[in-house]
Amino acid sequence: MSQKLTGRHNVESQTINVRNDTTMNSFNVVITDGDYFVIDDGAADDLITVVGQAIAFEDPELSTFGISLNQTTGIVTVSDGGSVGFTITWASAIAIRDILGFTGATTVIASGGSTAAATSHLFGFYPSCTAIDDIQDRTPETAHLVPDNDSVQGIWFGDQVNHTLTLAFDGGPRKLVSAEWEQMDDFMLRAMKGQTFRYYADVTVITAYVQVTNPDGFLQLVLDVVSATWAPRPRTGNFHGSFVQAMPSLRVP
Image (cartoon, rainbow, N blue to C red):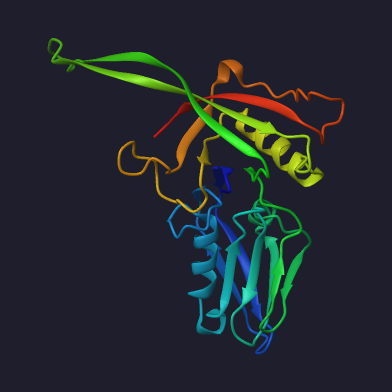
């Protein structure tokens, strides 16, 4: 069962230029500003979906444009589902290019072909070994309901659920390879800044966790700022060997 961690990006409005390489007509496609995850789940806050639909719906000449995410590696691929070919110019969309893992000023898609990104997308971690989610404790929380000019109307009681995500890598035949190490390092550096991320215990379940009806759904978390430090603690001197990294986290809406 594949697992992943993927974080939320704040993206300012950007313009991607896409050329139909058969007619040589170019189109400027605007991606509106917002907070996006890289998930490929068809949701309005998914950057894969937003970019794909914005380009394909811009003009009939771009209707065969496609974009997808490999749920095992985090690699984004752009494609031509027809026989025209496209050239993407990232000049005004460098931030989106970087988030998706592409490099260079342009990305060329051959007629009927596809082009994969150079690296996995930013703020994403796709471990070959296990990521374990565990509820560490529950902190009681209360809130008083007080109108501006009146007495207390009620008291709300609830629990803050504290999670610990533990990444445990076995130093056996499935070692932490260089690409995974870079993924984890990028992920931790961003998560330490308080950026929201999602934990998918099963990448085939793309809906949110519900205790009774959807226990395998994703959790939306943020690292506990009190313990948000990132220092690798390998059991051996080799970062590509085995180690355990625990990440105390808080569940957020």
